[in-house]
Length: 151
Image (cartoon, rainbow, N blue to C red; front, side, top):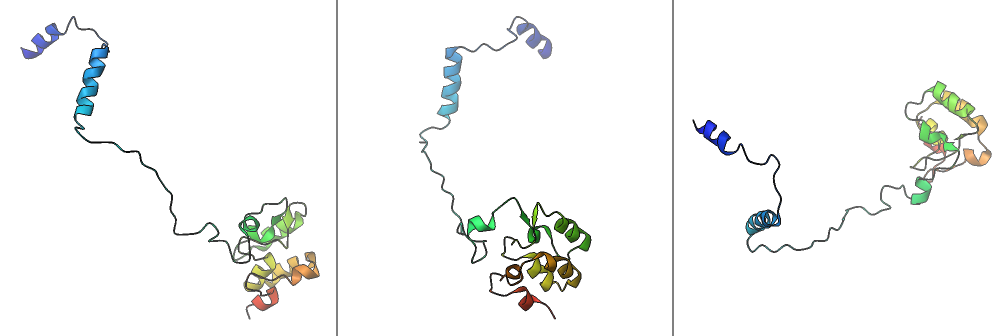
């Protein structure tokens, strides 16, 4: 019989809760009363890092140089090991958008990469498109592509 009594008792009750200043004040006192004498303090959040902003950028390059995005994308940024000849050929044929002598974020050109990987087929495609200065480009360690050749 308890359910029937509760139903009859609440039959005339409003369907939506009524919010009055007294109700809000009572709720506020219950919530904040539970905090007791706890005092809230303002805090300041500081971001700390064990790395400097320039860390991760290869030596000899500025942050701007490592993230430079000119209209000609460096071929070395588009080619990863082991280097697929068809992909390299396609990139090299796109003269308007690709810089065959451009450096990646580590200061390496495609010439440096291909020499390190002993990819003579890729070197044969690339070398005719490079100037003498491009052929003598040095990596961040000061080595030319010839010095990087794996024998």
